[in-house]
Length: 562
Ligand SMILES: Nc1nc2c(ncn2[C@@H]2O[C@H](COP(=O)(O)OP(=O)(O)OP(=O)(O)O)[C@@H](O)[C@H]2O)c(=O)[nH]1
Ligand SMILES: [Mg+2]
Image 1 (cartoon, protein in one colour):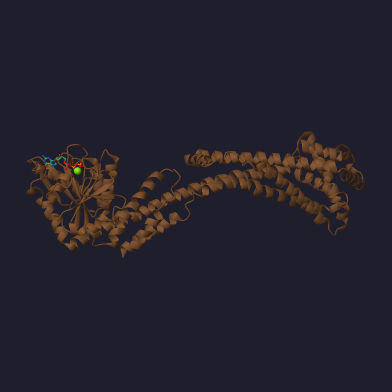
Image 2: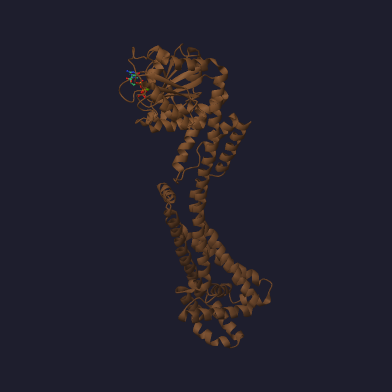
């Protein structure tokens, strides 16, 4: 159990609940509370079963908690008062021989200790040694647990979570209030042993009020909890007369001297608490998984946007979009389309020679054409990438945690709403590299083949240009006059290439070169842009934490069963 409890504490440390999803804030609080309870109660109790039982006196402000503790001890160890709430920092009364159990950080490590004087801050625990307290228990006077003061509520809750036993003080006027009962219910569900003190009961009302309270306790599953009734009366030196607190003192005394009864109570609340923590681990796992699912959802949307861009670019490449405008004009410069078209039907040999001459004789026109192609591809890639970035940002913005992520990285100087600054340069380099690889492809194709070698004599650059026209106007997606010019040209180009390289070779070269271009765009541009989004998500991925939580929760539950 100790091993599993320690493991749970570890898994709950810095739980990946960073995205503000519904329930995340609650889960973060629950995780913190679980860790606190492990540190304040479960782990120290599992380590030292023999440490004095911690009896926490809790209840609403003015119920008389401090007065009762003082009366039990027979001395004013905690100052009662008329200003509500009075007790701001808890007072722990212990036997002088048991100081070492409470002075260190064994329990309530987050609260500093003070001895011999009233605490100056709420987050201090005043230690008081009194021989009137048995050495097997310690009694804590807690601040009011339903306080208007936040710090009171927090520390009171922390104390109750760290207790082995509750003494719950209420009054004849307040016993039906709602808040105390939510605490009592949590005590029941944790198997916590509770004694009730019904304080300040007007003379003669004890029977009636007592009956009603007993009925309420039965309904809430606390029918077996002992109830101590204390009449409203004049105080003597701030203390209740001894006979009024004697039954409560006797009950605590019996518990203090009965090792077995004490052990049973401790075991029961320990088992109940650990059972709750195991269930809590499962709930937290759900919250962590939700974070993971949401991160994946955001990642998938990025994937959608950039896949769509990749598909669109592939289409742009095939359907002639790249061939519009300048590219087309440079192509016409290069081969003088109209004339070629007319002669398309005439002897292919002569045509080939003419094109060959045009290509090999005009290196500048070829270069200009290739420049125009680069530019055409760059425009398409830039536009589609910008669109993908817009789409991804749009998906993220719809969800508040997605928007929060965009804001978060902006504070770190990263603007995800625009493509990365180096995009244009990266695209230009990509196209240059690709064109070089097309040339390389043609050269390799030519090596050792007579027919190809002859074609290459026209100039590998010119052939590459013809091949590119084939790549960018394959399906003739152009309209009107463009069809005649580009489509015709590409037909001419294809025929020439086919004549010199063979039909099959042209097809496969076109295919290979196009696939290569698409692959490069996917990896070197779109992939890089998408990665900017995905790396933001990386730090919010919960990894295997959900599974670990379930595993540790399961270990706790099975260890309990043994
Ligand atoms: N006459 C009379 N006064 C009481 C009795 N019990 C408590 N008081 C007074 O009621 C006031 C509140 O009592 P405390 O003991 O300070 O109450 P508490 O529950 O500790 O209150 P907080 O510390 O604010 O949570 C004090 O002025 C007490 O002196 C009682 O039985 N009779
Ligand atoms: Mg008090």
